[in-house]
Length: 141
Image (tube, rainbow, N blue to C red; front, side, top):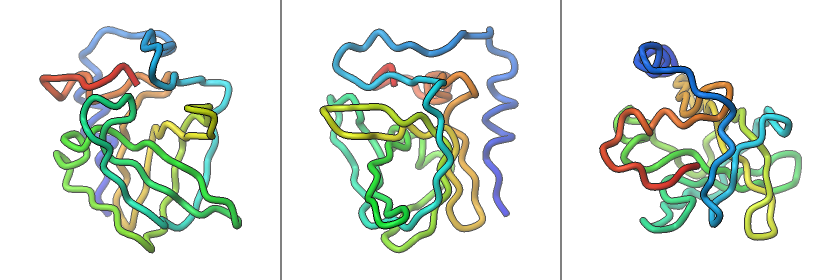
C-alpha cells in the first residue's frame, strides 16, 4: 500500500502553523471545517479543469448511494507528483469539506484513497499542501 500522507505531513512539519483556512478568494470555494464529510463511492467521471478556474486541476464525479457528488482533489501537477491516477470505475474514499460552489455541492478533498494509495492534499484545518510544493499556487483553495 502506498501512503503519501506521511511524506506530505513530514514535509509540512517544518512549516509554521496556519489556522483554519478561510480563503480570501472570492471566486473560489472556501474550506469549512464544520462541514467535513467522509464518503465512499465509485468514480463516474474524471475531469481536469483548466488553469484560471478556482477549481483548477483534478476533479471527480463520484456516485455515492445513488447520488453523484463533485469532488475537487488538487491541482494536476500536485497529484502527478505522487503518480496517483483516477479512472472511471475506481472506488474512492474521500474525506473533505462539503461546500456550495456555483449553486452546487462540492467536496474539497483533504484525503483521498484509491486502490492501495492514500493521498493527503490538505491538513486538518484545510490548508492545501500544494502551497508548499508547487512554485505557482493556482488558487487559495
